[in-house]
Image 1 (cartoon, helix red, strand yellow):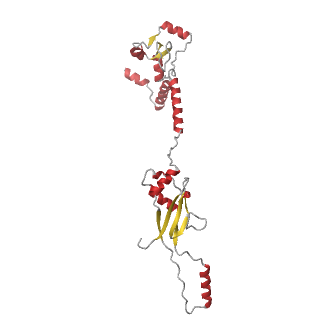
Image 2 (tube, one colour):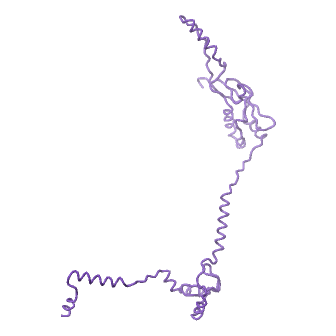
Length: 274
């Protein structure tokens, strides 16, 4: 009978069940729950101790700092790093509004300043670029090495320009055509008998000399540029940087010494077999 009477008290229709459930949910939702973070829980468990030694990130000797009880019990108190604070003394400290917090910067600031100075020194060292030291040979020594490794005559091979043969008389041609041909031949400048295709320039000479100097470590240090070389003979006009015909020509190499080095450049005909 008790079960029957209890079931009769429960809501029977759907709307009543819904209203009853909503009332229960509202009652549950009105309850407030308190969530305490892990740090807050640790702070509540900490006890205030008196430091007997300077401890980095905590404080100097004589300071009052919070500490985990297990750390105090197992390590700091046996090692005489800190001492317990009686309850009466703790109440007096709180009444005096004494700072009982931990000094995280104690014992670390000096190290940070040293680290910053080290970083500045490192940046300055990175900015400093050590100059490249090159042991430059003197002009006199360079001339001696050139005189030793460069032969008296430097050979080059070029193809000769074939000269045009004089045109034979054409039978049946008009006199006007012959006059025009003769005028064109007369106006065309006649090439040198030993003219070559292209030329031999001071750049070619410098490249050849550098190849001869490359076989010796000291001679390879000789600094030779195109401006240090010029043709004394065989050049056309004021252009002393090239020759354009076959033959043997005088070459001057000046590196700042008292006397320049003289060499011969021989331009030979390049045959079909070569």
